[in-house]
Image (cartoon, rainbow, N blue to C red; front, side, top):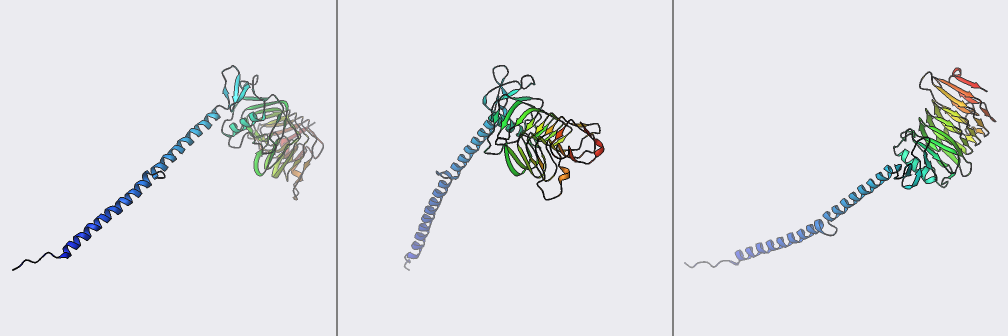
Length: 339
């Protein structure tokens, strides 16, 4: 019997299998090359990851630099009694009442505001103006101190004039040269009417939006003050457990309610024996009710509204060209007015 010759079918199937295998290998190589390029190429994942890491590292470096700047806001220089504010040229002083940190220009005053609002309260530290200062009235002033980051230092204006104290934001609260001060002495500051005006939502005052356990002395305001909702004062808007002495207002004070030429609102004392003093203050400006509601009774020539469950309010030696000395009080028996 003759053997059968091998069929071409077997040879054909093997060839096809080999071709498919070769094609598969080629495809895998192509895909592999694409994948490798995606991972290792110029725009690959690894390259992008390296760039992202570099950016992160640079951001950390930049952040550390900014933090260092903050630490250097008030760094003592090599020379005795010389310091710097935020890298600004050396400022005389060491922070005591006898040798306060001297503020010579608007940049230094703004630097102080930035640092306080960033969390440094400067408790017990003294600052002083040594020149008249003109702020940038083309943009909103940044009040020194907030409700969360209060200014607890002391400030002597040395009777120098501050021009260009401008602010306009109908949603903002605690607005003035100082936004919020606590345990502070603030004195001898003059706010000029030149390029100065403040408009905010509430707790608006030329010297301070709000103060607590503090003293304000010998301050003058000439600027117009406006509040949208309530609480506006020529010198201070809201005050508690504090004293204001020898202050003068000549600006116009406008608020729907709780407006006073010196103080807009005296808040509740924290203890029964606490006294709040308003001594020898003068108003030569107008206090206006800019609301259609009948809220005039809460506006006063010296103090707008007094809300005193505890403690005593002493108003002594004060004069005003408009309205009564105070608008209204929650507890009249705790309010003492003397000539």
